[in-house]
Length: 463
Ligand code: LLP
Image (cartoon, rainbow, N blue to C red):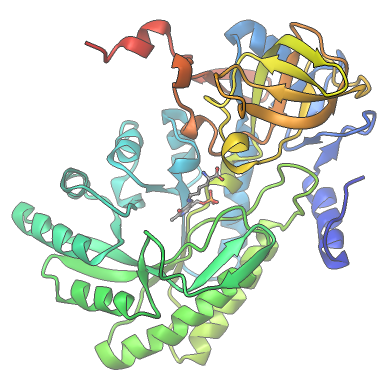
């Protein structure tokens, strides 16, 4: 059973979460892998997701391959909706496209009544390519170009998340030229930073995002937008971090923002209709990540929001959220073929796979940890301690260090769990590796949603 690394309250919460949301573990193996959503082991001892044998997917589509449990993506959206709708608050949930985006996912987000948070003209274009309602999209970015602003205005997006004083002028002037009015949230930095298991209150003046409340720049931002002829300020935005468990940081930020909002009401007669508190809900990559159910987090956040508004004598704004990782992270798996196995006696055994940091950058970049298994031999005992290496030309191109799997053989299928967020979206063509295909599975059926890049794709823009 799982290691409990922090206080007993977290452990109890973790156990309740596991039983409530049916996270299964593979007990037969020495080091187990969590199976989220529809993940299970079939009668052949293969990993099955969405009722589809993952080994047959590799036969059909090749490797490396990203596989998403579509049912789990939809369930996550529904959990957010359910928790928010029972609060009685007006709310809006925008999926943060940066975690992973493709046309099929946009269609799913539409069906699940989600909005979209986009951070570039590229993400906006992708959303609009399948007729997503532009009013349900908002545009982020610390350096939105004139082209991006013009494009977003032309497409009548729901609102801009304004990030700087310069941007206020830019949007105002482009809006004026186009005869368009923009709606805006102002992104503020409330002086709270959250990390995975803790939060800290910092001066936080050194951030490329948003305008700082403490040094007065956020107020200048509010004043500038209120003066602007072509922008309506409809609310505020903050995002204190990503892969966060617990709500202490969000609560501290909400309290601080409301104290500040009271001043804005008194001095400028400004009231925020919307408070967007970003994303950041943590997911369980490994057993070291202690569950913090979305439902509990939202309940705490909503209680804090209501109390903060009441204590400052302000009305309760609409609550907006931008979850990314928590919607798609646990639903995604990467499947690779095992190739070279190199044992360095007395040191370590490298099991190399046919992808690497080009499709899995988070281990090299952040030292992120993952659970791995052999998808074609899920019931076998984890007999060897190995390091899974990618095939890119970089010693740091590792997928997982010192992990136990059954004795690997060439041709085995290695699965890495929890790769649904910030994997495909952060993939690169380093070493001219081809980006893998992406398949969605649900109810025993599979559907290709992004084709594997071809060799021709790799050089198509070269002249
Ligand atoms: N809203 C804003 C303004 C954000 O900056 C982010 C993430 C989100 C929402 C979504 O956060 P999420 O719910 O996914 O935690 N590449 C890193 C993550 C970078 C997050 C950037 N911002 C990683 O792989 O962990």
